Length: 300
Image (cartoon, rainbow, N blue to C red; front, side):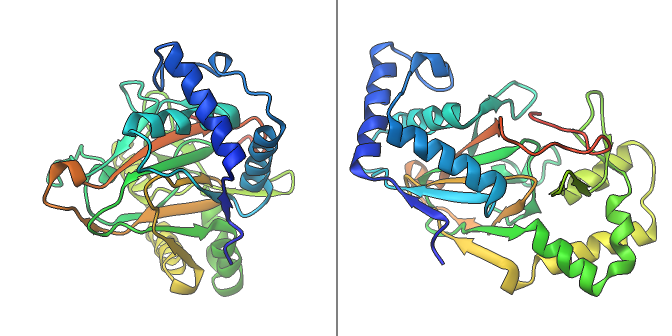
């Protein structure tokens, strides 16, 4: 199926181009403008925004928007259009200690430095969900080889655990320490939460392991087995949707509904051809209500 792809028509592209011209006339660049700087009352555009919001919260939980011709826009133009769309979908939230609203996903980090975040390398990025309602990725350039994006449904993993490993299910509802979740350090959260008729999940294995290390609370053997089961099911090829994001593509994912990962890649020798994506974290007005023991987190 390809019904997870929305293709922008010429009218929608012209609406976005006009919005781009509006902020350029004001000498503004992302992320230094607000929704009020770019008023858009076009019915087709607002319908698109509602369609995407609905699909993210009550549909597949992810969407890919295609139609922006990367060859006719500058890099900044693409980022500005991406940010305009983001402002109409939700509220951008910070991604790091520096208060960054737009993160660059490229191979600029030292793999031997423990402080380097994996998205700053060219290594395989394990399945995880980010600490916001929605994560958006804009592709500026793709790699010479590799770098496919992969998605897995939390519900598919949950239902398989229920069917094949029901004895472990309670451990996913038991609170674990997750690094970066608390204000001063790791915070407690279950991996799964079922509340008001909706399943929500939060999974970043490295953050769980680091959280327990920082709190000096060793994980039990059964907890580790439960994470191993979760990982094994997540990596079954029949559950995984792989896609290559092309320049100009925008991918949006609900972090409570799907996990995302990235396969390892090799860059072109020329620095100006290196793989580059731009990341946006959004707080959504239509996000599901979270259980009291499943703390909300929007931003670093």
